[in-house]
Length: 482
Image: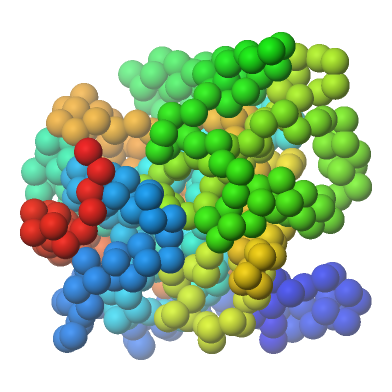
């Protein structure tokens, strides 16, 4: 029986498609698969997911971050550390590798999905489908890999608990936010378990669906969020990110966050690297997208810092324009490294093209992905290979922006957590066996109770780890940007 990791190598040949006929979801009815999921509770009780104890010999969190920093762009490491120091919530966002090690020691059902690997509240948002509709879904896939569904759910619930304290709440607010994630996930995965495979595949959380599910008092806020996302197109990005020089647009530098560079960190000339990468990237696109891109020409390119966990990896913004028209297109070329889940789930080197891993993972679990989503390696001058994926930088995108101590946001946090739990359930239903997962989850409070307790325990661990980073900064052990 093929595993999800086989999809990274699947070229849809007849022989491979024939193997799929052995897939467990095809051999058993939904009722049988739900019963099999319930049977797993005898082996892994749902109450066991409440457990979190740091493993004996747990690595020092600062040492884990230092090991990651050693392979990142040196001048950006202080920026990454500064961003992670701002709060425990920011620390959690940037420490997916640390939490992956903790989750590896937790109980697991071995029900596999295409796991996001870095599930937290800030990795959801709005984006435009190919049909120009706004969709709500997971929007970060850098760590995607076949893995346990419960790892994603636990990380998301823990992030909800940490966010509640960040917004000024207390322990009760933290547990309520975490439970909102799990309760929504359990309810939605049950609904997907009762749907046909194709029906699940086509399902989307779009504007109309969100408004229908939102209480009356939140609909105006939701509509305002949609309007703001629609305004975030390439034209607005052109005005915000560029200036006109000698009749042509140029990306404005904001050192060290946006830097125009002539070489990659390893010395490869930027022009040479870009040409190599784009040739490989174009080969990953369907013919119609290649023809569409051929109508644009490259105007400018710059390195741009994004996020928290990604700071220090190579990320480039390419400005293209349609010949003879003010019709810009911004592409983001982002480095793809081995997933933080890989050391705990797969043999090292079993997935050889990391950009392809990110793209295929996104296509499998995000309902209507970017039409320019693709991948490409850059072979550097010293022989070491870097892997990248490409997507649009600005295309009707919007996301949550939490501010510390924002009590108004705290009041709506549980609703938002429920929406994120729904989106995670849909992602897992598209790539895994919703019936077995639902059978295991059940319909009562057992799983929300357990993961709610886990989330409070991991909140405390996150605060300790953040404190360790603060101590390292005070001692001068780590470099921190002002």
